[in-house]
Structures are given as structure tokens and as C-alpha cells.
Length: 252
Image 1: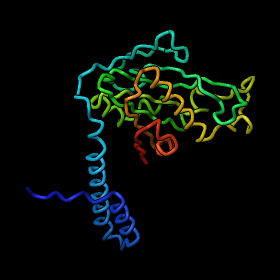
Image 2 (image 1 turned 60 degrees about the vertical axis):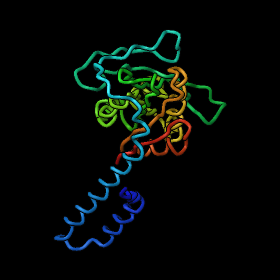
Image 3 (image 1 turned 120 degrees about the vertical axis):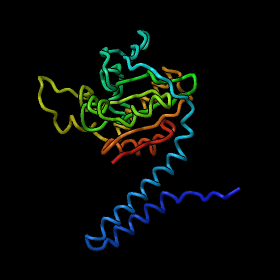
Image 4 (image 1 turned 90 degrees about the vertical axis):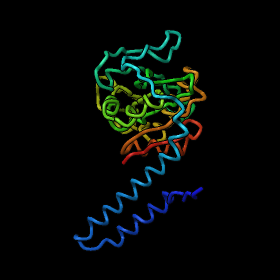
């Protein structure tokens, strides 16, 4: 049969892009260069999909109505459901809003304080019997509701892959407040000492490990998602906690 040439590596394509920009010529030639760059990254994305996605595509597409997930059983004390109405499009209206008791400080064992971290769950696409994956959004610098309603990539692929969707809120944003000053005073610099990406990543790892145990999803691959600062968190999450997530998609 005809031999198949392996795709050009992602690293080589990035090197080519860097070379093109370094040699950028006058304005009339930039359009051609941009077209070439667009092709390089399109081909890179195709190569990534060809190599990565087949390992996750273990579940046949299933038509599932978008309804609110069931609230957690009452014996699971670290969760409570705030309830969610059913909506016509994916978003917070379709998810169950839940709280998780997380540590204020993950690295100083003398600090025993905890706080309630919010997250949203959508499980109607999930096929745990086929080890459907977990799509985990690493919340960034805003209320997590914004990202539940705007992260289309996760919603677009969840049904096809039979995935469970989790959107975690970043500490100090939304209702996930590790420190609450008395009398509504503004946060001091000392109050903000726990606002670090290291603490946020530890939040996500602890939450994800707890959910896997609770949902008996130890064999499900977890993929971290994020954009902008959240994209940095997703990449760092994979680097610092490789046992928590098996991959990361970091946008922008």
C-alpha cells in the first residue's frame, strides 16, 4: 500500500511561524504570510485532534435533553444543591449549583480554616458506564457563572464524548470567598495573602479528587479547560497535578 507521511510536528510548525514573523516584509506581503500562518496552525490543530481526541471518543453520540442535574444525595455532606431552572440553551440554567468545603490554606497545616467553594455540574451527557471523561473548567478572575455561559467548546463536545462538565469558581471571586471581613469592610492586603494561583490549583485538585471518589469516576479521564488566565491555570494544572488531569486545553 501507499506509505503515509507523518504530520509535521507542532514544534516545527511553531518554529516556522516564529521565522515568518521574524522575516516579516512590507505590508503588501503580510497577507500572504498571515495565510501561511493560518494554515500552519490549522494543520497543527488537525494533527492534535487526530492524536488526542480518538483516545477520548469512547462513547457514541447520545441525544439527551438538556435538563437540570439531580442534586447530590443528602449523605454527601460537602455538597448542597442550590437548584437550577431548566433553560433552552446550555448554561447555568441547565446546571446544578453546588458547594465544596475547601481549605483556605493548602500548604500551612497549622491553618485549619475552610471555605465554601462554588462549582456548577452538568451530568446529563455523562456516560460513566463507558468511563466518559470529565471536562473541568478552571475558573479565573470573575464569577464562574460567566464561564459556564460562555465556554462553548466544552458544551459542543460534551454530548459527543459522553462527558461530565464541571465549572469550578476561582477563590476570591463570585461567592467563593476564603476570607470575609467583618462589617462588610474591604479586603486588606493580609486578607489577600491566600489569593495565589498555587492555592487556586490546589483547590481544583482537591475538588476534582473528591468528585472522582464521590461519583466513582476514578477511571474517567479528566481534561482541564481554560481561557486567558484560566488557560494558564489549565496548563499549570496539568503540569503540577498530572495525576488529577490527563490533559489540558488552554485557550488564548
